[in-house]
Structures are given as C-alpha cells and as structure tokens.
Length: 110
Length: 113
Image (cartoon, rainbow over all chains, first blue to last red; front, side):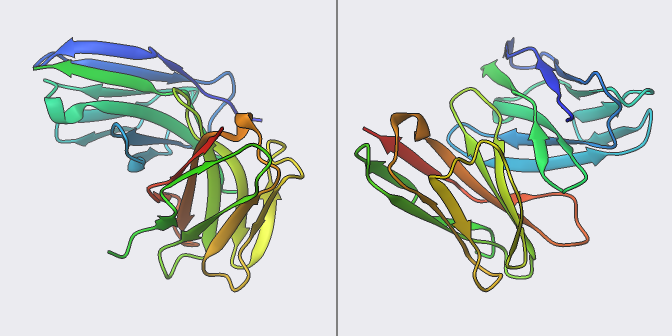
C-alpha cells in the first residue's frame, strides 16, 4: 500500500523565520493532502494537490507537488505564533481513506 | 455548530471494561471514518462507512473493536475488554460523495488504566 514519510519530525524556529516540511513516497501518488493540527486539537484540511508539479499558495503557505508525484512540500514564509501545530501530509487511497505521514511539529519562538 | 461532533470527549476506564464512543457527522455527509491517533503519530485508519454499509476495516481493528452506523447517520465505536494499548485519541471524520477532503471531529481521548 501507499506510505508517506515526513521530515523533519520537529522544527523550532524564531518568529519571522521560514519553515518547510517535506513528504516523500517511494511510489507515485495520485494525490496529496495537507492537514494542520493545533496542540490539543484535531486535523484541519488545508489543501489537496493532484497534478504533477502543481504549486498552490494560501497567503504565507506554499504547497508543491513534485514532478514525479512522489514528493510534496509545505513552506511557510515568515512564521507567526499562530502557525504553531503539527502539519501532516496524507494520501487518499482508492477506497477514500487517508494514509497520514507522521507529521512535522512546528514550534515558534516569539 | 454544524461540524462533526464526538462524545464523550474524554473517557477513563479500567482494563477489561467495555467502552463505546459516538460520532455525529456533518448531516449531509454519507461517508464516515474512524481513525486512531497516538502521541507523536499521525492518525491511523480504523474503518469506513458509506451510508450504513461498513466498507473497509483495518487490520488494526481487532475482534475486540466493532463499529456501527445503523441508519447511515451517527456511528458508534465499541471496544470490548479494553487493554492499556488501546489508550489513544479516537477521531471521527466525515465527507460527502463529491468531496475528497475530510472533516474531523474533536476526538475522544481514551485512557485505559
């Protein structure tokens, strides 16, 4: 089955610095979704990418899907304390269930 | 609030007891999913319903676990003879047929003593 590996496990940044998390697979992915989970909260959908080389932006967040559709990244420009949380990539398989990566926990020093 | 709701939010039980959790999905959503999340990990799929039909169960779902969605609306997840390893956050999510994104509930945190 499909699996996704996510790095780094943790990232501790100074407010205003940039942040990037990476999601990798050994197989070609049909899609990739990104979710954010605040401390003590539940996963909240951010975006879905389906096309090779696709790039989407949401304010300070930039999402990319690799040309080979085996990797994806989430980049946050100029982090703020409100960005704190764990960011997960996930793949939806043919039976509609999500297969999550292990997540990257972002901590922001004010 | 028209989001996904779950009850109870917290459950502490002794090993060997049975527990039951409830999930109320967004009303027009026909798909309902259960996931389990342990500390520092991503959610792991347990089972999935389309309307009242349970279409897939993970190998993680031992025979002590059972889930129902009798009228295609709310769902229950029961764990019999709980073990300490069952301690986790149990998340419910729902989606509609035309969507790929899933809406998660706040979860039920289970602690087995």
